[in-house]
Image 1 (cartoon, helix red, strand yellow):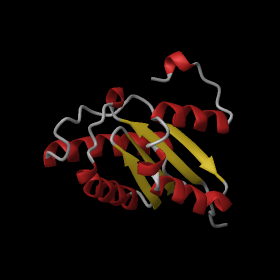
Image 2 (spheres, rainbow, N blue to C red; image 1 turned 135 degrees about the vertical axis):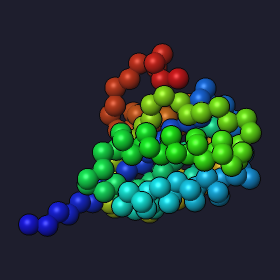
Image 3 (spheres, rainbow, N blue to C red; image 1 turned 180 degrees about the horizontal axis):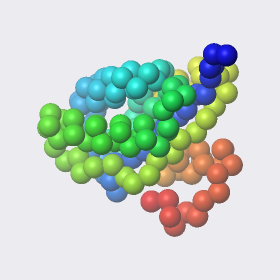
Length: 148
């Protein structure tokens, strides 16, 4: 029997201490690099976006790839890329941890639009509010004092 999966993920993680170090000028190069990483792991990227202090990745993760390992690899490789290319001079690393949320495939178009419009979204909402909202939307229990 063949293996068939359709698991849509939204992965969210921030810079260390949520520092505004990912200046927009370098986004395209970073996003292209992360897209290549995902391709190399047989994952399908639907959209990547973000602002100065965090990223969102909408992807299908290959069934042989563990999300935790994939995200660790993205963060490590992206950090090396940023430092080697001197892409974001004030970048000081990524936060510990991440959020990974699954969605039904019918939510894909809305999710892609949401990530595409991160710049506009964050003119009104903070990353903190957004992240708490995602946790609540997905029924994930948390203690706020341990989030940030």
